[in-house]
Length: 189
Ligand SMILES: C[C@H](O)[C@H](O)[C@H]1CNC2=NC(N)=NC(=O)C2=N1
Picture 1 (cartoon, rainbow, N blue to C red):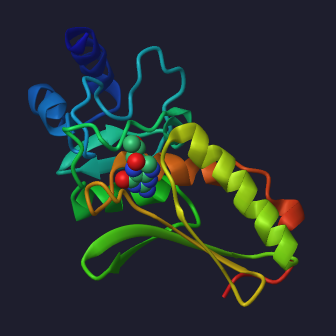
Picture 2: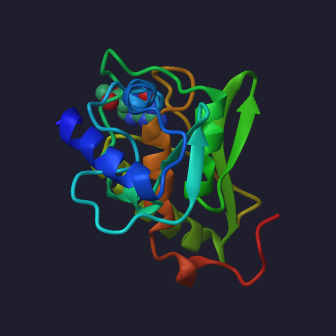
């Protein structure tokens, strides 16, 4: 499968991707986001459109498509080869989860986003929608509802004490929720 992907990458490299070293691309992208997957990140088989956004990761230019993360499934956090991703890898991925920021709390990198909701009960409705996604993924955020209408969510992989692709997948799926009816017109602080 890697061979077909490399052939596809090679044909792409003639037109769009520059300075790509195919062998090192597959080596570099295996495990760069904290999991040893046989897929080369960002270009799934049979993917129709590639975004024009070119990301670099460890000096390699590659195409990543934002919708990839929301189409992925979290892996069990108990899997033995899960390990925290590098700070560089996290910075490469953060543009794919608009509204979320990288924060470092006591040495642990996390994803953080905040919202202002219309009321305390709307905040609980918000939590329930997020909880449904988390339960479906088997991956869970830290939920905070403070000052009755301020929601703050942190996402990190507790099992490894840092960030893995699971966290970005969950953040992307939260971004895909229809929450507008719960949000206050005022923006979060
Ligand atoms: C067995 C199951 O995968 C683990 O208990 C999950 C549950 N949800 C989780 N969520 C998060 N954010 N981090 C974890 O390490 C984690 N572990």
